[in-house]
Amino acid sequence: MECNKTGFPEARSSLRRAVVWLNRLNVQSQTLRKAELSLSLYLVTAIRRRNAEAKRAFELDPLSPMINTWLGFRYYDARQYGEAIAQGRKILEFDPSFAPAHLLLGQA
Image (cartoon, rainbow, N blue to C red):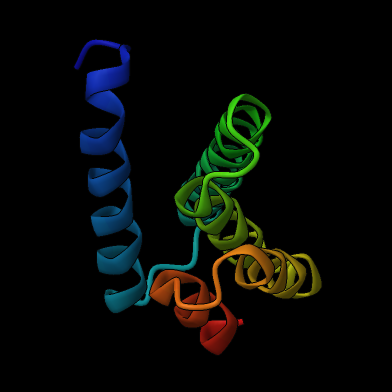
């Protein structure tokens, strides 16, 4: 498999399947721990990358309700619930009927 952006979702999916099957087989090995660590590091990196993208979009259009909501969900995904709630409330200040912001607050 080539090491490019298009191969990462495939690799992530394969790694997840391997971890699941190794756990099902009750394999307790260094390989399983490495696979779990690799998957965890990938997910943390992906969340950080999405957060950076959301912040950049916010800088370009700070009044967009959709971008603000996207940023709020990035906070939620990163388990920064206080920031997600603050973002949802901020959206509703300038658009009280924006349904995705209500969804964000309901989940956070």
